[in-house]
Image (tube, rainbow, N blue to C red; front, side, top):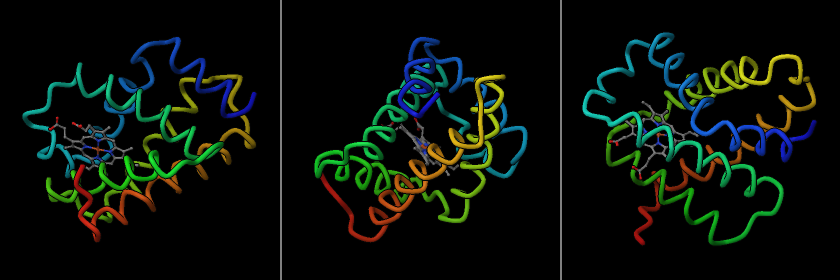
Length: 135
Ligand code: HEM
């Protein structure tokens, strides 16, 4: 299974992966909980699932519009005062949630593809911390 097939499974399962992710992220890193105090998680899970589609596309077929979206997402996170250092935690929890979601279908190759894709997204989001994209 490659990243594209993995994304199809994730999208078919509605917001299941995003649910696993947020449970893990908030359990593993209690220090991030205050950021989520007022968050509507039903909405948040859908937005995150959609963003995984964007992250995969940015990895397989990047376009200026997708890059701009990810930079803008970073600018929004900067406005919420999300520390740059918390991205490493986000990535750890996401990789663990993905492994749990895929079960037997998870593999080192698939993990490497998602890691690279998410790393590219992080770089673009952090560029958005500096350049203040507005759309
Ligand atoms: C690659 C990393 C990340 C991705 C792809 C991502 C994705 C998203 C998306 C798609 C949204 C919804 C934006 C919107 O409302 O329009 C969001 C909101 C949010 N994110 Fe992230 N995020 C990332 C990293 C982080 C980190 C490290 C934190 C640390 C605590 C965080 C905390 C939040 C919070 C608090 C919200 C606001 C939710 C709300 O007020 O409705 N995110 N994120």
